[in-house]
Length: 99
Image 1 (cartoon, rainbow, N blue to C red):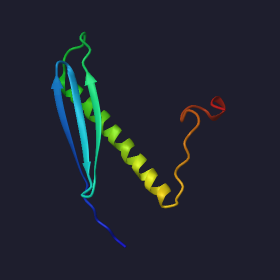
Image 2: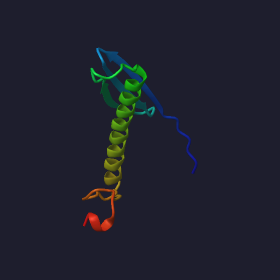
Image 3: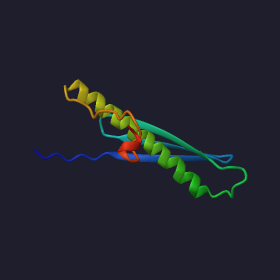
Image 4: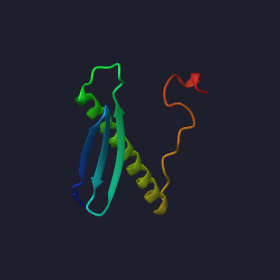
């Protein structure tokens, strides 16, 4: 069976007083999820608004992705499927260094 869906993601950015806030909204047609992120310009750094936009937007999308993954995990469990096991240690380095 072939399915085609279109999901829409919109990102809204607001900058005020050296802080940029972002809200990323995913609309699936049947539900909406929202992720949030922010970035603050250090007072000693040069103000480059595009960098704050990129940081805040990426953090909002990362938050949104986490919420979408948690929703998928809940739905898999409800359907009787197992979820991916959670790591108990760091996911980097040499195996002998983390045992």
